[in-house]
Image (cartoon, rainbow, N blue to C red; front, side):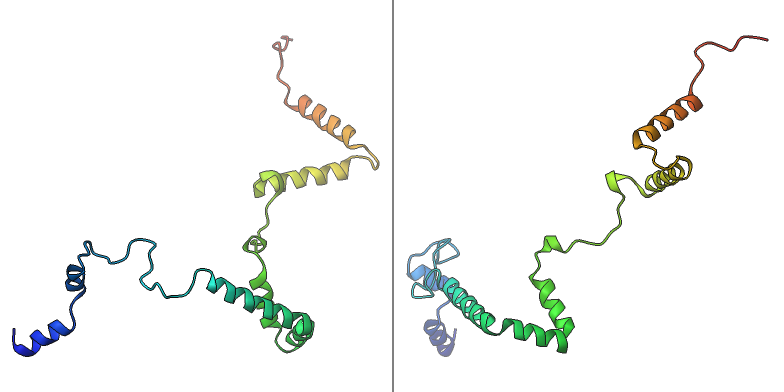
Length: 154
């Protein structure tokens, strides 16, 4: 090593050299949770700044909020919509998707609608839902009944 590089090396020691000189073992100087800058920002100060900002914004909003919204609605409705959607919780932003009730798939829902339309066409006006259900059940039983005994020979 020449004289100049040796002086530079001594003037700017590496982290390993500093750790060795200070009898620090391991790859890091600071333990987990320990700050390297003890004179740094006090705990909670960032929160205090945010709270002060929100308080100031709330004060301005109380004085001029409605006026600003009216102007924004007229001048830039897209910006107003963007702000409004930004304030909504994610749970409120549901996807618009048609889904049949009771977990029915599209084909089952379509068949159910056909049955309802048929009942409305065939049943006399004013028929109670109970009477309609009883007639449907009796008709289905009669249509799909299985004989208990074989038919007698003729």
